Amino acid sequence: MRKRLNFRQWLMTKQQILFIFSLLFLLSLCFSLVLGCWSSERVNNSNNQLKIADITATKVVRIGHQPHGTMLYLKVRGNLEKRLSPLGISVEWTQFTAGPPILAAMGEGKIDIGYGGVVPPIFAQANGVPFVYVANDSPSPESVGILVREDSPIRTLADLKGKKITATKSSVAHYMLIQALIKAGLTLKDVSFIDLPPPEGQVAFKQGKVDAWIGWHPFLAELQESMPVRVLADGEGLTSNRNFYFATRDFANNHANTIKIIIEESQNVGTWVTEHPQESAKILTNSMKLNLTTAFTLTKNRLYEAQPIQDRAVEEQQRVAETFYRLGLLPKRIWVEDIVWKRALGKWGSFQ
Image (cartoon, rainbow, N blue to C red; front, side, top):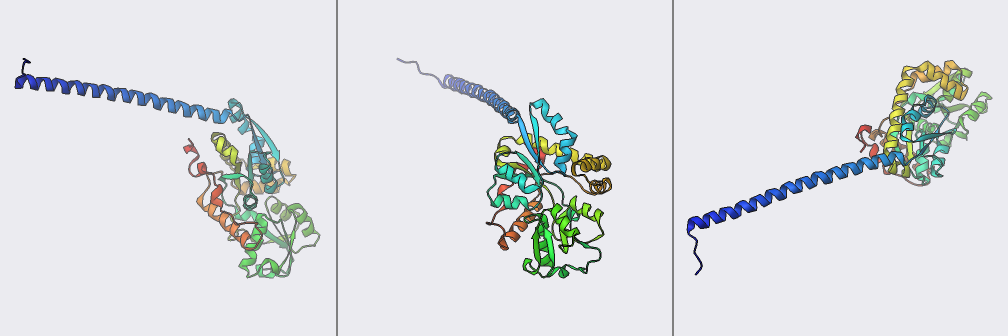
């Protein structure tokens, strides 16, 4: 016969079993925590390796710049090379005359990073160029303007009716003309629009072949210095006239930290320009053969503040796009927010 357990023996046996199960549970929990920490460390190490790979995988960063603006100063100062060289990355600089050829080169895969104004990216997006907005400068409406000769009978925007006006097609000057005419109750059909690049437009204006010239600095300041003119209107209330930093979509997707470094150095050189306007003016003079006084005026009054894409900047860009589309000048309707680099929405320091 099997020996029956009394109640006390049965209770002790049950307590022993519960103790064993509790001990096993605690051991299992500790093992899970250790395994979790080990896995987390592996993930963190993996992420760190990806960050390193993100930077080291790109041996050359190809940047397109204009003969003025932040990227020019960044190139001349050489700070970007000093920052990237220890990471095994070199910089290849290519100069372009304006924003449209920079974006065209991005579309052809010739450069990775570019810098341009308000309107060129609108048309580039409509034409299918695979790029994204990664940063923007502060607005500078006073750096674009409508000039007439000092003795011109044109005194108001409404006086532009029937006049010959030169500006560069698909540029901020073109957009400013459209907005100025709308403000005066006019349309492009009410004027004779002559499409010329800023330098050629300057010549036509000086020779009296056109009644008004619309453009941006440094061309604006250069024309003001070369002959007696009046500013009929600047961009205030017509266009914000800010500059943008672009990257090809592929480069942005694969090299976030490299872009972060480029924008950080753009911020640093922007601060340097503000604090050293005379030295900055000499750089601009050498690049564009400007009068030193003119160059100094520009560098003293212009802010170069690279910052993450602002919602307001996106909204402004969308209004520009809608204007050109409504007038039948843009080949298709676009949505600017579709090509804003998502990692640019926030502080640069938040890059992961």
